Image (spheres, rainbow, N blue to C red):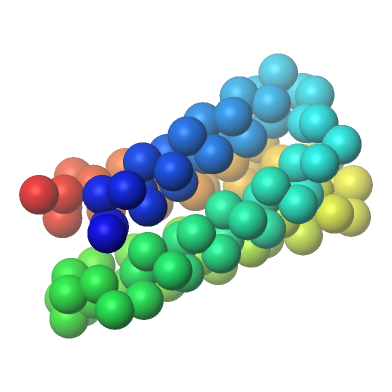
Length: 101
């Protein structure tokens, strides 16, 4: 169910975000970021809220941003990490403000 997936997403996101903000992503951060992207896709797939244009746009946006974060971690693009974390966080916040039940 969506609430369970969102709780798992939140926990995973919190750890990744904190690691990046401290400037010390763990060696498995790229793999965990990929898992986060997968969780986001599963959460949004079949979600009734996807019928809303604004929800779908925010969902698509956060998946693209989280994927970019994964790629930056895989390619040691540490110069991009903080801006990508900020972008993902802003998208999540915007979605929660507009669509959280």
